[in-house]
Image (cartoon, rainbow, N blue to C red; front, side, top):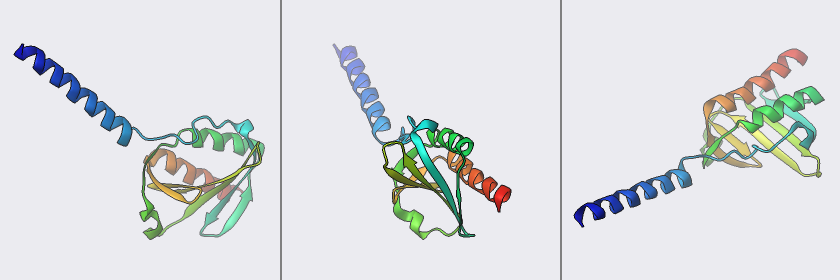
Length: 137
């Protein structure tokens, strides 16, 4: 009887741990289902130097791939206290809705709401915007 209770308690502890991990640490991929065809138009604004570029079809395709990989963790508004370059993408979706996504590592700001994010995908969005600046600037 004592072994059964230990096994049951261990199972419950494991289930509780998995539930906590799932709820708080797994992250969210807000653009996992975004395809290039979903983007009717897109632009990127880099600040500084306060310039905006309209993205080509090929660039929209690359952007969709980068956004698919972004993982947000928890909401965090402390991004407002950071200084540095913000790379903001304005997306117009096929259904006419607009979204804004600012890569500001280690934050991703989606429609004005800041989230902690994994560094690599956020940095890839920064590099992409800066590559466009260097090619067109």
